[in-house]
Image (cartoon, rainbow, N blue to C red; front, side):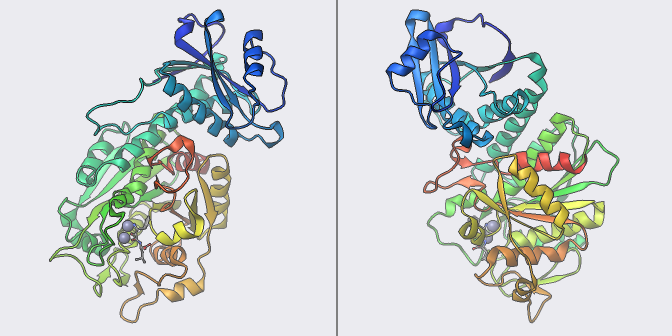
Length: 479
Ligand code: BES
Ligand code: ZN
Ligand code: ZN
């Protein structure tokens, strides 16, 4: 899809294009063609949010999509994201492939252009690779944003972030037998200006990565720790680590079969990291970021790791396996302590579909945020408030640390159902030493479940949660 800023009258055939025009509720309909104003009045267009009307006017050879933004006092950039997204979906249904978008003119053209490009990319994303026939209406081919050429860099940023989010979604949505560790590696190797190295499964034992070794023991697809380095600053690196469980069956502590297909999304953390690396490199961001993705299936089998096993992690700490379904923290433990040891990062962050408890606590629109550093937490809250990717700070205190003490090892891999998100955080805390650290639990936000409401612009399946957030956060960290 082509997205451009464009000044003045467009030359293309007006019958085949549609003008997207935002309106506030109760504001006089002005600055639009008189004919459109009249037509909107006639059909009772209110400008309320969710009031979206397609108006075809053969008399003046134009098509319009009027989009209500609701009351001006209540307006925020999120209002615009949602309204734009819903409008684009309506337009898609008409089959018209060329859109000329006017901006609301509230938050500054730069921000509005950026959001328009980002939302257009994420809204119109489709995971259609496995559909033999596409019965949908033709896709929107171009969006021209009315404005001056000085908006080009905002547009480009929005488009890169949108496309990188979709890149992450593409891998996250893949069926578990095809979206394998090797396939992830292939995608990572396609990134420009990103240096790739891979620790293969047969090295896990030798390196003392007992978590990765244990969890991947019954995996058929070769497990890997993929490391992606993007260095465009001489500062110490920022390390981001994404949970990449290609499929989480629960292992010997097998999950109930209903809904198990959703556990292909247990690779959304790793997918997000892949998307961040792509975005940073395409933006030529002045940062030094290392992405790590521990990737494996979690399967049962005669050779599988078992409840009762004790694993020794990369930093020497041992963990007792109470359930093989709390596998994410076991592989993250090795990746975290490896990153700390090898790269001495100035800060470290992990992003993981880690606990059902986090979904219970915060639902499907807010990710759990934990950490050991107030400044980093504030920075994350600040960056998050400017994106759609909401986070909420959860505590890790001594009671949670107490819950995961083991009688036979240093810690155990579950502290029971109470405070499940926080005890998982308390577990990971053992593997970062004194490095400033943030943990994001995206179990609720990484994909859309049929039964839960979700933002229009991230549609069905993997949402790409974290790509925009962590890219912006990385840039903020090196500013
Ligand atoms: N991948 C799951 C977490 C998950 C559950 C994500 C539901 C999204 C939706 C994780 O590996 C897991 O199974 N966690 C267990 C931990 C428990 C056994 C301590 C959980 O949350 O139930
Ligand atoms: Zn699990
Ligand atoms: Zn899992």
